[in-house]
Image 1 (spheres, one colour):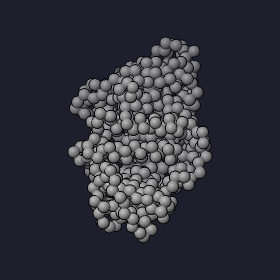
Image 2 (cartoon, one colour):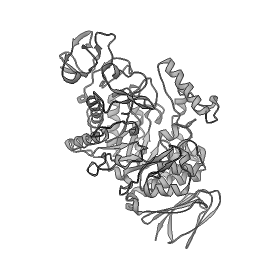
Image 3 (cartoon, one colour):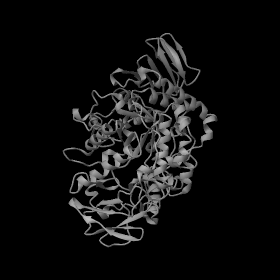
Image 4 (tube, rainbow, N blue to C red):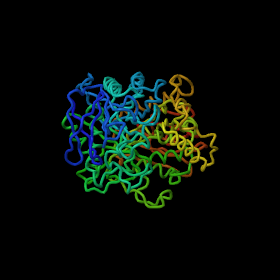
Length: 577
């Protein structure tokens, strides 16, 4: 027997079609419909019929969509999978080294099972937490995953539900925690059937993707329940250790208890029930410390958030770019501020936003923030998906890695970054609606034409070539110049993970000296110093203490008592004696 239950306040009648038969559902409280069906079991396809309208449509809470987001749902029994990770506990997020990857391009096969074959590599590299881009079902066979519409059903082209479990189980067997990227701020443009069932969207609020998810108006209690249940499913039934929450800036919620606070509380309760420590990481550009402040201190209780200010400050110093949101950054002084205070904008006027932005983090530790120089957005949202290593010298690539991995934040690496992968990460889609596909391709070309790009030079998101070009070439890790960068990352990760001072997230202990005109900066963390020359000329930097050289980006660096001489675009890491 299986109990079918669906929230469908818009419907006057609901029935489920299963194995050629229809079964009516009984109307209950607050728009819920329910029926017990004896013949229902794992593996049978079904769909809901609302007000007699055919064909049947997918279940908003479908656990399996083997024929795509527009096909029938399939019953899935979580108890059929045999786990091997009993007594597993994830390493603390505070001492993590995260690795963000996209299943479709991480391997040539583009599946979860193929990705298992690279877990030993990640473990040997020194990674502790693997973060996967969204796995929820989206239209077509390829995409970033942020157009998901069947949020409870893992993408079939990646391998479906059992493949997700095999991947997580295999990661845990190697001591790797796994983080799933979830999207609760919008649904994809096609294949979303929730609007036929109830008020999942609040059209009175607008986001970059249309109406906002309904978190505060009529029906919002059930919508919030939908998303909370989704989060708990990934943690409980798929054994994920944490969730990354996409663009929480687009959560428009004026409720007394903000959705983030409610979600964080429910995750903590589940952790207490199962004896696990789960965590949430938010993507937020609000520069609002309430996101990661404890609820007891008036915050939302999320464990950590991405730190765009650190990325923007470091990126602009390295590349000199000043377009879009980069116009607010570009000085070594701002980079120093980000290293000491996480947020560069703490209430100052933002030229890009044309308003004041942010507030100080005050007493929050650095491990409330993720630091990175690349991620799927910062690479993939560029016109041609080019990486930092395509834009700057190997010396600057090494400076970036040194600051990311020696900073007081939780470091995150984007797939292929650790060996300066030659492959881009292009924005790619596989929209099945011809008109939408055409509009996406045209819109992408027009967007970058405004920045002076020729439309013929912009990869077509709908092209299979854009997807194929984004797949990593793993043979590069043993080839020059990639092997040199790989060795640099490996040593930096080893250094970070083996020294207590580098795991201390106290921002007040991070000391920074710099010369904005000469373009050098020195970051001190305990007994370790990261000495960086961003300029194209040699610099001499006075040193207060002699240091033992641990890592150098070039052998031409000279350290004398009281002075460091660095050639252009170089970095040295020392340990004070």
